[in-house]
Length: 404
Image (cartoon, rainbow, N blue to C red; front, side):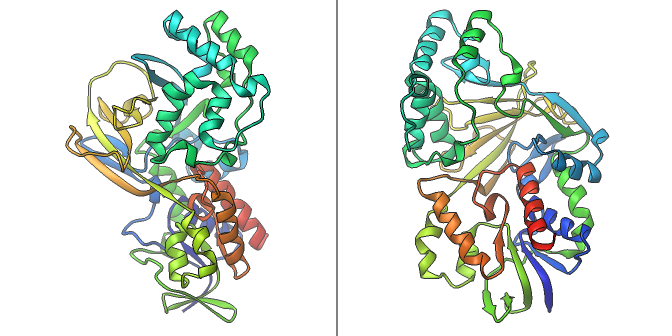
C-alpha cells in the first residue's frame, strides 16, 4: 500500500500529528505502534480503585495558549480540576516546600543559615563564568551545600548517570538566581508563589487519569493506528520510504527512540557515534497503599538510601481515586521488587538523558534524515525532555512546516 504520511509511534505526539493533519484535510496517514496499545507514557491503569498513570508524573500545565485550546477542544476544560501545586522536598530529616532556595527558612535556623550562606556565595551570584558540566553548574547555581545535600544526589537517582557526565544546554530556560528574593523569603518567612520556576498550577481530569486527554485526542484517528507493528525495516526507494516491506510512504514522521529507527534504516555508519550518544533512562512506577493526611501532590527525595526519587499522593490531585494511594518513581537501575508494592510497571524509555554532546548528536541525526523526508518530533524524535504539552506544541510546529 501507499500513504502520504506514515507516523511511527502512537503516543501523544504521534496521535497529535495525525489529528492535526486530519484537521488540515490530510487524511492519508497511517500510525505504526510497536506495542499492543496506544498511549505511550500517557497511559493510565485503575488498580484496586487507584488511578495510576503508569508513565509517571503527568499533569496538564502549559505556557502555550494554543496547546490548551487544542486540548480543551477535545476534552472540555469543565472535565478538569484545577490545582495550586503543593510539592515538597524531603531534606535532612525535614520536609520543606519546593523550590529549596525560597524555602530555607522552613529548616531549623542553624541548618537553614548554612544553606543560605552557601547559596549566596554560589558562582552565579559572584559573577563567575558559567561552567560546562551539569555537576559544576549545580554548584555554580545554588552553592555546594544545596548541591551536595539535594541536587546532586537527586539527579544521580533520576537519571542513572553522574551529573558530571551531563550537559547544561537543556537548562537555558531556568531564570537567574534572584538573591534579593531569596533573602526576602528568609526574612519574611514566606514564599511568593509567583516565583515558582514551573508548574505553579495544573489541571487533572475529573474522571479517570491523564490518559483521558490522550484518549480524547486519539479517538479521532484510532482507525489509522496499526498496533503490534514495530518498524523493523526502512528503505529509501526513489521518492518514498518502503516501510517493513509493505508500505510506501512519501513522508515519515518519527516519534520513537532513534536507536531502533536507525537500525531499521540500515545503521548508517556515519551516524553510529551520534546515535550512540542518544542515551535513555528506564523508570519503574510502583503503587502502594499508605495512610496520610496531608495535601501534598508530590515530594522529592534526594536521600540515596531510598531507592525512589519522587513520590505522588494520588487522591490529592485525583479525588476520584481510592484513598491512600501512593506511587513512586524509581530509576530502573535502582529498582528492587518486593518492597510492599501492589503493582509496578517498567517504562523502558522514560527520559532522554542529556549527556555531554547529546544536542549535537540529535541535530546530526535529525538533519541527516530530514533531507530524506523522515522527520523526528516529540520527546524521542527530538531527544529532549519534553512534557506532553511541549510534545503537542512541537507537533503543531512540524505540521505547520509540512502542510501549512
